Image 1: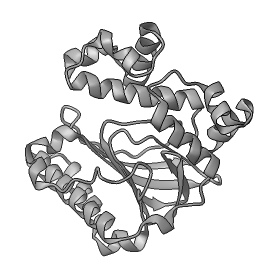
Image 2 (image 1 turned 180 degrees about the horizontal axis):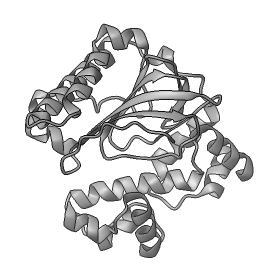
Image 3 (image 1 turned 120 degrees about the vertical axis):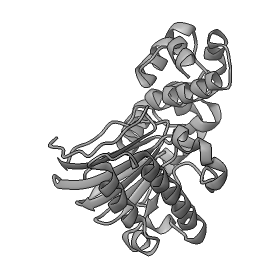
Length: 274
């Protein structure tokens, strides 16, 4: 990757970057922050919770905290994009001023087409981000917060005033059914075998199909959902030793390894630092 990055951070509260890169595939991921991507040039296939969105120049896509997503490219290309990461801690002091966009269904209405981006002035927010991020000035934090409030408020307007379903690429109904089943049962003792039996399909076929449309294996997705739940339970004051079984892990060792892999810290470290 050949990046030109303009980045501005403060205690992990926010990050802004502009990226130039040759196209390739990214692994599925879950973030604890709002991620907004503005595609300046190129084409990419963006998958959110198993639903595909084909992005072209000028389109914008966003994910809420803990929405699973990945992106790849239908052809080798050079692309240019801008990212804005908004951590909940940044907007916590003014959360009463910001409309709630968490009512959106997971994987639904994530993509804003180019004409709506312009109509609602979302592109101008990225221009403001660039001007106040480089060079950094004493007022940068306040200006970034203003951009975050403006971005979420305008996204709320887009979500509530428009039907964004038409920008979604065709989805695979079988994968959607698998995702729905996992979402309802991931805290139970389920694996590829149980899912295959529920779907009346061969487990190898399901594994390949799920990987093709989501970029993740079935168990990677299941464990990521479990880790997200574990994080939320820890943040709510839950005891680390009692959480693993409630999240669907068969034992504490498996939970410990999965948590460290996806969070980058052990459950105990995460609790102490949260």
